[in-house]
Length: 481
Image (cartoon, rainbow, N blue to C red):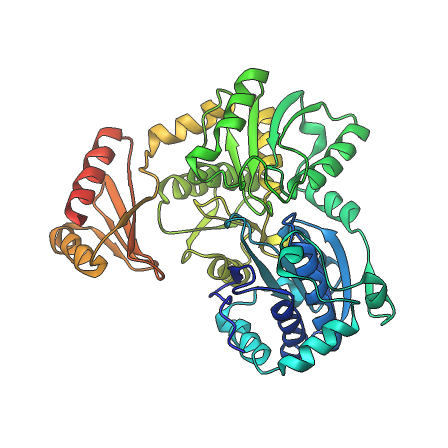
């Protein structure tokens, strides 16, 4: 069997065509065998097919020799945390994050929550998963269930695996790790710093709502004066309000409107598996992820002076300025979670951030979290006594940026060459950390080619000159096209 849902860093595929219970079983069995994993923790997001896929995955893990701990409905970061916290050999989250509703997938880590990517075993798992005899796989799935469900039933969330039959193996247990997870998440802030706040929280009907409720209970029990205004809070795998992906401008209105209507101090929205959070200031304006990296860097350096901070090379002048001014050590890394995590481990960095709203934390097994960032920013609002708009707009004025602009081009290589032919000889700095980064004293740009589509991604920033940034952005886009 040829399996086509393996990508460079995770597993994602169209339901039935690329990912079903048969393939999920194969992935679980291959993961356990290839990684020699004797203990694995699993969870799944709210998508209707996440539960049947997770149970078939579990059957495969058990047949591959692993004992499985099932955390139920989780965000990806809960699996990252549990893998490290519980001392597991591996962890797998069933999730398609912000992909369309007819997709699902998996994110995999090994012991110590180290990522499993194409370079570190993911493709070897795929290759092994393809070798299992199909009749044997069907027989094993039948062993763990009473019937094979139809495609229609599977899409609606019905599993062919019976939990009672998993339990009879004595290698499966369903538990909650929420209390330990929340305790750890809240350790990143000093609760005594909090003054009254009103926060709009938009889970997008994804997995964030349950975790947020658990956090809210601890804050309430501790008499912390935070009021939550909840939007699309109830988990619902049919996503009645659309797939949660606040990176898309069309997905932001409900959060922004709720902030304005309620007079909140800040708005927070998550994607489906809540490994990313997106912030809105008190006026309802969306805050670009780039400027959040700087805020979080400052928050960590206030607590841990002299620390190392990792950042991605698309836009970074603001981050570098904040880190050096606060006595920290800025370190540039190639974009992407596998590269960021590897560099953080190598340098023992306390925090790493990407403009795409992925934020990584040393004490969170160097993994990304969508819950830690908003807590740290909320604490900053209280300690600085400044609104978020002021904290951010000061930095935007100092280092305005274009945001990432994607251009679909007939010949990306030729377009990039035309840019280099015009600008490279004038540059004071030429950087190839990720794509091409050129600096010109008061402005700079980064140009990256997509690995999977004919798209070029442009980011431009300047030092305190919005007009210059806008002029150069237009100039570069015209040259690219």
